[in-house]
Length: 129
Image (cartoon, rainbow, N blue to C red):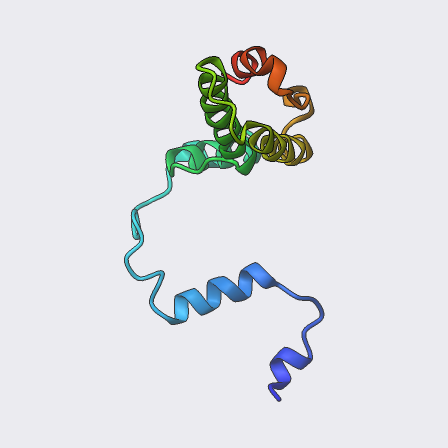
C-alpha cells in the first residue's frame, strides 16, 4: 500500500485527476502554454472570469443542453400532433415531462417551467422556443 495515499488528510479528486493527466502527457501541448496571462484575468470577479473562459471554450451548462433537447422534442411533437399523427405522442410527452422535471432541478429558479400536456402542446412548444 502506498503510504503517501494512506496519510492524506483529505481527498483531492480533481487534483489527482490532473496529476494523472499530466503524467500521461496530457498537459504537454495545451493551447497558450508558455504565454503570459493577460491582466484581465487578475481583475474583477472570479466567477465572471470562469464564465468567460468556459464560454470561449465552448462549454454549455447541462441545463441549457437539456433546455434545447426539450425545445426540439416539443417542436417535433407539436408538428406531428398538428398533422394528425398521434401514434406514440402520449409516451413522448411523458418522456419530455421527465426531462422537464430534471431540467427544473438543475436550472436557475427563474428559468423553471411547468410540465406539458398533449392537448396544449402548441402553446408549450412556443414557451420553450
